[in-house]
Image 1 (spheres, rainbow, N blue to C red):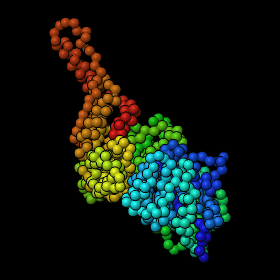
Image 2 (image 1 turned 30 degrees about the horizontal axis):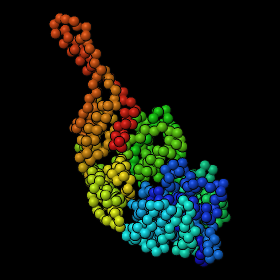
Image 3 (image 1 turned 120 degrees about the vertical axis):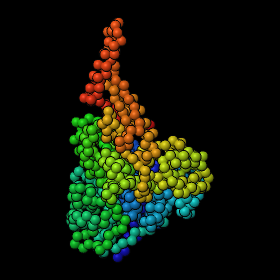
Amino acid sequence: MSINNLVRNFSIIAHIDHGKSTLADRILDLTGAVSAREKVDQILDNMEVERERGITVKSRSVRLNYKACDGKTYRIHLIDTPGHVDFHYEVSRSLAACEGALLVVDATQGVQAQTVANVYLALENNLEVLPVLNKVDLPTADTESVKNEIEEIIGLGTENAVCVSGKTGVGVPELLEKIIEIIPAPQGDVDKPLKALLFDSWFDAYQGVIVQVRVIDGRITPGMKIKFMQNGSEHEVTELGYFSPFPQKLKCLEAGDVGYLAAGIKDVRLAKVGDTITEVARPTTERLTGFEEVKPFVFSGLYPSDAADYNILRDALEKLRLNDAALSFEPEDSVALGFGFRCGYLGLLHMEIVQERLEQEFNVDLVTTAPTVVYRVVLDSGLEIEVDNPAKMPEPGQIRKILEPTIRGTIHTQQEYVGAVLALCEEKRGVQKAFNFYTGNRVQLVYEFPLNEIVIDFYDKLKSATKGYASFDYEMSGYQEGDLVKLDIKINGEPVDALSVIIHKVNAFTQGQKLTAKMKDLIEPHLFEIAIQATIGSKVISRSTVKAYRKNVTAKCYGGDITRKRKLLEKQKAGKKRMKQVGAVNIPQEAFLTALRIDKK
């Protein structure tokens, strides 16, 4: 039995800030899903950090009813997806739940890096892609030029492209008609065993984990016992429904439907994005393809500014992980910073969002170490280990080689900034793979970079070099051997683990000079001399010295032989030597904060 042909499932994909959440608001307005009292901007973005930054972090689905010009009422399932590369996998699973996608392109900016990446994801999932030119109400909009870019850069025909304004609503009725015309109805069979795609999940304090699903075959009903095929866990469905955009309960979800289910699941890690859901009594024989275990790529240490807040930070991370299964953390302690946690993130934006949410939602004041990546270290014994923390790096004599993760990065910019971008890519050890000129003055550069060169400040420097006229997208490309070393900072011979970094040997001397000079300015003088050294293994590559406070012990000598003064100076010298051996260096927290951010200045 085929399902209803009056159903359309589609997603909105775009580069950051091209207006997809605003366009989603206008679609909700036009279909009457939101009353004037309930209406707010970015209604599908319900996190504070999403509204502040104007970005989408979590996927949101909404069911709408639309009466088309042919007189029929269609049921539309809209999925609003994140646009940033950090959430690449979540976007891919959301697209797998659809038959079509709206490719939203800003008519004033044209095709950007993530525009290309996301449309390729849609094409990989065999979706019908409908180009949408947004912000056509602005005086700088150039629709013809942008259409040429879409055809030339992406290779997508624009004969069905729709020009709209997410702000004013111009063109949105025509867009809905085009969605009905272009995007196909879902295929599936309600009589087959249940097969459903889990494309998002989060934790609710009252119902446990809420799971968003797209039913491929079969049906789900309350009381049904379901199974997650990746981990084998079984649960009984307690509630079904859909968002419109507020939750509405249902008695059944059938093939082709998008909705949510609750089943008393206590741990969001059991509901993995991309998993296949089936019925225990009548299971399907095949899993849906495309499932991946989400792994963190970027790591950093999080410490409370006040050591007394350690338990508060731990509780905050536990609560945050309830809604973010991609976040990983484990306890660690630092001689300099005390007790804290080593956290793993999907990327730099994910790291910033986690830190902002900890500070905003849980009121935790944080100290963050410099981000690092996962290295593969091959020891002389032949054993290969993974290192995500410089403190865990073996001694240089035990290491045969170090493999660093690499990415394939795509940069879109204008021709006048090519020189500055090329210089930046060379500085970051990039290897050029492609260099393409397009319509007008648009340029596409493809480089292979070591990931550790990107995680600190690459994006900021790229925006500065191009006055904001550049976009950057990347994907993981593997591992390659690198000439890497562990750079330690020692204060009076004692290593400060919070300042240790894994760095390319070519950059080690410069970085060592920066850190030692900065720490010299930040550490207050003591009664004894303080040596600040940057070392690679046992080799000192840079040194700065904080001079000691000095009392003029010869002031009381008004005459007599020079040996009297010399005797007093030697006595002072011996005292300072003893003090240096037993004295402790007091390093203020601000010194670590400033030193850890040295590369961002």
